[in-house]
Length: 410
Image (cartoon, rainbow, N blue to C red; front, side):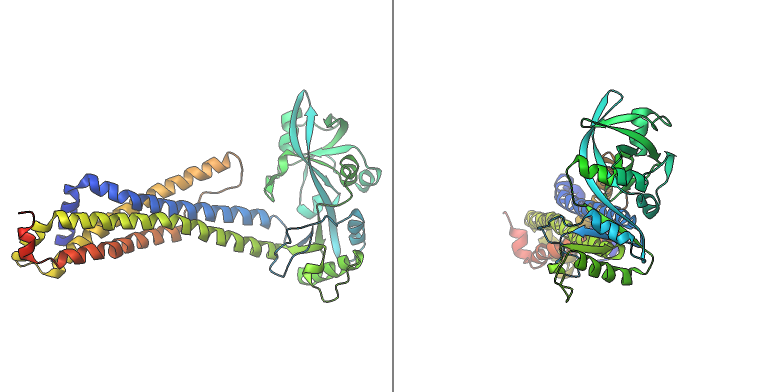
């Protein structure tokens, strides 16, 4: 039987039972759509996370609390805060340190202009601007004087300042955090998101002021801008912190540290590994529905063989070979799965787009992108499912004895 004849015959058979064919395809449609959705959202998430990590400069090191188990970057679950303002001030004296900032993160109730809302509060230091290449829209940033005097001054993110005071009107105004008044000395230019935080909706205070207000004596983390290559700066920083924290760790065992130092390259590698595993896990879970869809196709094809027993017998009596019968039923199974795969890819792409739009309502910075590997694998897998799950019913049909087939149901 020629290929075009085979395709027409398969299409004609499926058309006669279009209702059943559509229901059979549904399992493949859902399975392929789930795979496309999982892989596309996974890739978008990976790009978003890496873009956030990339905002951490290539000349920077981040010192965080708690040890890590090994050089892969795995961080201990049990972490005690150990980084101090004294560590930051010691780092400022190191000749290889271009800039350093210790930060503390808190949440508090902001009250201004008759409105109130919970905001993220960052205790920070003067080098924050130069290290991260931030710029002021108006006013000034903190100096060492504000840090040393524990000044009750503040710098606002762009969105927060505009919302409460209007554009260009925030400087020299006051607001409350809890019960304490703070004077606004500056407003930052729009910064977007970094490390999954919207910087434009944050309140920036001198780190010493935050330590007083929230009774804190430890840093959340310390960022170092290095004047030397990070390959040299990282082990140097680790040695210094072990000395300052009185850690007996001459062999450099990360598990014995009470801190860990991370570079951008390491962070990207760690995130890439984590998101890669999650992407595989999501695809594996979605693939289960493909298996269910394949089993559904096999069952329907068995039913079809049983219903068309006389047709098979008649065709064999007229000279059709086993291979012709087998190819016809196999073609029907493949046609079902390929059509289901095409619909599933379209449906999955639409769901992925809608998913990204929903995410953007709560978190900016995400980009829609289709997983081309997912699309290719979707077509290949759907075709393979048709062949694998259609083969047994097709083989059963091909082996029917023509005389017994013609006598069926008599």
